[in-house]
Amino acid sequence: MISMNWIRDPTAETSTIKRARLKPPPTLAGKTVGLFDIGKTRTDEFFNQVEIRLGERGIKTRRVGKPTNAKVATSENLAKISSEIDVVIIGLSD
Image (tube, rainbow, N blue to C red):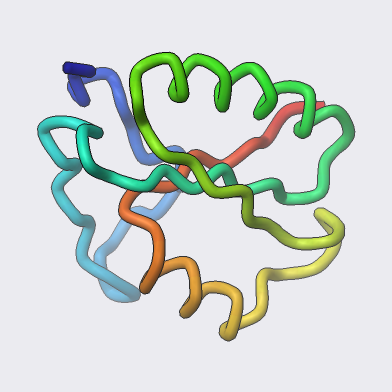
């Protein structure tokens, strides 16, 4: 079992006007983890390793993202993610 105590939301929201924060699941068992590539350089290399580590623990992953960091994710893409993925890791690496 992977503890979720170390997971944090990296957004800088100071109010919950847009959305209420969801409580993280207590475990990733049975969940699908989305690896969200925002289009930054070498994020794929980072996610290759994350995907290997999660796979070793029997956790399903799904790669999602946007073509470039200069564009926002489309509402269609976000709707698909929210309906098919339980937890998202956003790759912000360069």
